[in-house]
Image (cartoon, rainbow, N blue to C red):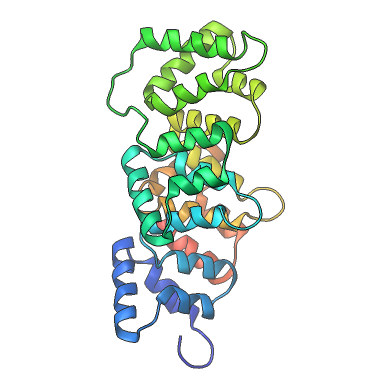
Length: 292
């Protein structure tokens, strides 16, 4: 990065071919050797989507997610879509690590910031999940699922108005396998899916949050494949979402997501990225995706 112009290819090559831990060590060594922040230097030398991607690579995994959450809650309007995507698909231990990273990186409480930027049932759902509310140990109880499905039916379709608190309680506390059992029982009672009932009975970000939880419970890998596909559809690519998804799933389950993507959409994730992006930014994404 010294002298006239910045050589982007070596930066892409070095950062995309390392693990999160190795990149963190590179950033620490850079700080020690030059007394400068690697991310800040990259931001000053690069631009656009490549800058966003390369700067994201200089952070640890949970630090990166914490910064994405912080950005989603700053400025005009809170981007609930991003908050939902990051929080609702993670388990209790991941959420605790995310809270710690947020406190260390953003010097604030994630729970308090959520309370300040969200409201109503969505706020209560998110705060509950941030406090280890979900059961991740218990076995599926089919008899209990039948009663819980009836409770949801009575709180929604079977009454005038919807009692969102019943939905919020079950969706924030029951295990994902138990939620799937509830969804199956619900269809027996209602003759339509739980997702369809939520679509018709509720609105806004709380409805979207419940639907995300259902999707994750049914097929988490498929959920991410759908997000990747949708962010590259229509007029222009949602590059910020594309970057966030690739960075947050690499080294975890991106290989499985690529297989699901091909299965669902009949083309590879590589092909979609090649079609929708260009230049060093495209090269960097492809190196990350192919590394899995």
